[in-house]
Image (cartoon, rainbow, N blue to C red):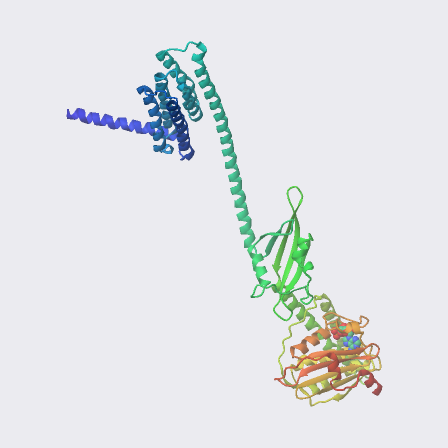
Length: 587
Ligand code: ADP
């Protein structure tokens, strides 16, 4: 007995295993995903039928028909009971075919009611399970609906007796088959459309994913470059910017977020809003390497190089613009420093060279030269001439930037009067070559200044050299040095060609020349003024064309002096000094 009991247990567990496997297979055949709509469909379909049954009951009660047949009630209440089942069972968790039990049982319920009340027309209720079966359970459901329900109907007729009309006996099955067929095919079409839509949705979401991926990639690439990029739409709105652009943008604003003033490449000329690179790009302009300088002159300035290009879409239609901005402050500063060094060294080499050449020429003019010396001097003169031309070439090659130079000076208390007298002596030969007289009677040799003596000597050399160059043959140069406890002055005046009013303002710019007949570089005055300003001083100019020019250098006399600014007219009038005109009368 015991062994048979254990055998039974084994068989039972085997049978369970088989059932479990069938269950898994069936389950795997069903859509694994949870389908909320399926549960809703079951409840809805069931509710429609039970609603119809309830309405039937109510109408029956109103018409005082006795629907009390036990079989009828069994069918009707069976259908109502199935409504509770429809609500209670979580249909999503089971395979689709499980819910086929409900319409099948509903059809049986209707059969019971039809058998109990053959004349009540209750058979029409079969339409409900027929629609349900053919819409939700594929071909099997459709066959069940068409032939199962028709079979039930004929069974009922056999059981309760046929109607007198033959047509009356087949009209219901025809109707059920017609409804089932049309439902089945409409739902098949509906499913096909849904599958197509699903496929398109998947395709669309994949495309979207790919696009988003590419967009992320482009954003990452854009963010990793160190130049600002801005995409402008056709309507001029800024659509995309990268991180570097935000950094550049921040550098254009002060601590309060206000935009700093913007200037042209020279760092001084203000730029009108309409000429700003962004505005030009928005107006459709295409340009390369347009430089703007941000920040007021005198404060730290940043240089930004901006380029703009138009964009076209795949149809070749204008699609806005891309603007690229780059901070080129370091590059421009380096270039400017290079130019300054080249220009300044070259220019400063010229002045002593001119003096050397002058003295060699003087020496060459002497008759008492020992033999061979004149040849040596000629060689020296040729070499000095060559050096002058090399320096001129270097100067010509250096940039024509107008920016000022950073002058490094080392100041101390020094003799200004003596410095000027020494310079006068050095330039004597060059001046006498043109029969120009250098008059130093106005030099107070006791005047001192707080200055970098070699640098100020450069300035004096430049001014005397110019006075000779642009002076008149047989003319004169007056050197004056004067001052007090506060300020020290040097005036270099000539009765040469003079400078036109309109040229006077710009002559202190680099590479600016009013007179191109005489050789020069246009750098001397610029360098001189930079040196004067580095001392906290200034150079003033007064000139009349055809009469002569006066250049006046103003320097602090002592270490603790800060000179207040004055106008050129005041500077010229300061000493009540003779004008070049008056002075020339005395020559
Ligand atoms: P460079 O003499 O090498 O041309 P500068 O900067 O020293 O350069 O002078 C700039 C210009 O100013 C000169 O080209 C000349 O036209 C004008 N200039 C300078 N000094 C005088 C002067 N004493 N008289 C007339 N013109 C002058």
